[in-house]
Picture (tube, helix red, strand yellow):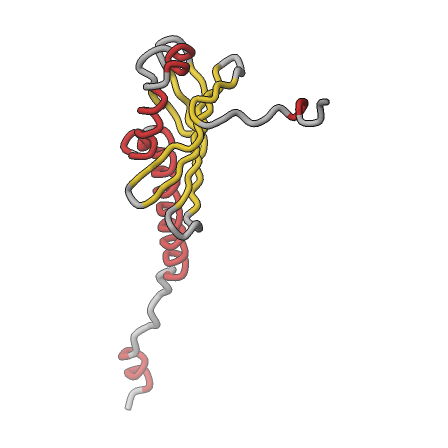
Length: 154
């Protein structure tokens, strides 16, 4: 048999197709897309998605029905941003939530800190504090905390 005939029948080994490179790049791109989607949803919720939140709608209703808030901010008070929110469902019977909302009315803007008691579908506003643009604090729902200067007075 011809020694050269055997070499002609052999196929050269396949060239590397950089599979590891494309696999790593694909994984990296997928991770970036997922992180961007989560970030985008969070940003959308904090700036515009809150308008459908039933708890925030309850807070806005209470603020709009408050004579003191209307005197400070004017009419048609609405939320134009959520500064932060927390939820705690460790009470066993329901939960609590705290919101800090940026609000604006026809006469000005301010911040509202609201504390809610959540029992099933019922939401009760337990504390509502409005801070106007000048820094004045207005207690719309709930009692103002005691003055620490008066605690030790005679």
